[in-house]
Length: 121
Image (cartoon, rainbow, N blue to C red; front, side, top):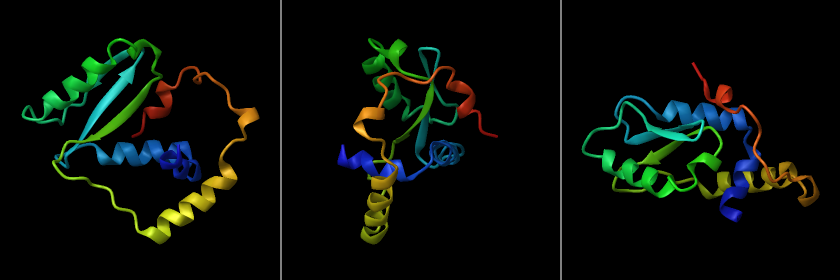
């Protein structure tokens, strides 16, 4: 859970925008869109790397209908892509502590009609 904590410091719209910006052209970030319980691989994935996302979809097929609409980005490079400077990481953790919801306010369900939030132009 600590690995995800820092994302509480970033607004959902900004996460969606940054995800969208990572797609397109060939930058080795592959798009997997989930809409209405179906997964679709983005158009910019090279055929030589498509097998990776086919494998992800195969793993998700048993529960894909329970996943809310979203776009996922996958690093299909052979090396890791993210390195956050230590000071920036600490700042995000401190910021997220003040925005993380308390345990009593967490709802165990997804928002309805999430797909329009992923339509970024």
